[in-house]
Length: 171
Figure (cartoon, rainbow, N blue to C red):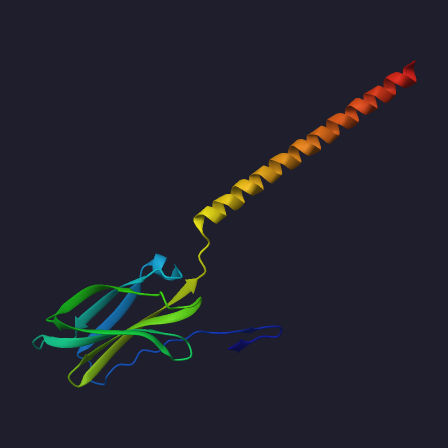
């Protein structure tokens, strides 16, 4: 948390761990539309693995994770892939069981005598149903139209009364 004179703002941090003898580099990139998702929508991530040494390829175990900022793991899945030089994967992470809030999506690439990690932040938001937002727009437009007509009628009635009062005074 960052404390200011009049407010306190939470700061969300994510740390990635690497082995001392790095054989692989890992990165995870979220599409812009996956940085904020509605409840139940999957988070789509591109995972890049790059071998940092000229040695032969290896089987790497990839652990996919979603964690909250209390450190609790909310999703975990694993698979093994062979990486000769580099590999790019597209992974969709489910968010069905997640409440609204901020989370970390991560990948741990484990290999003999080492690990490479990468993470990115995303947020689950409350979906505003499209039909509801359209209904609000239509009702708001109707309200503005009705108010405009009412104001026009009031002005018109006052003009007629005002003109009527002037005619009476002239006689």
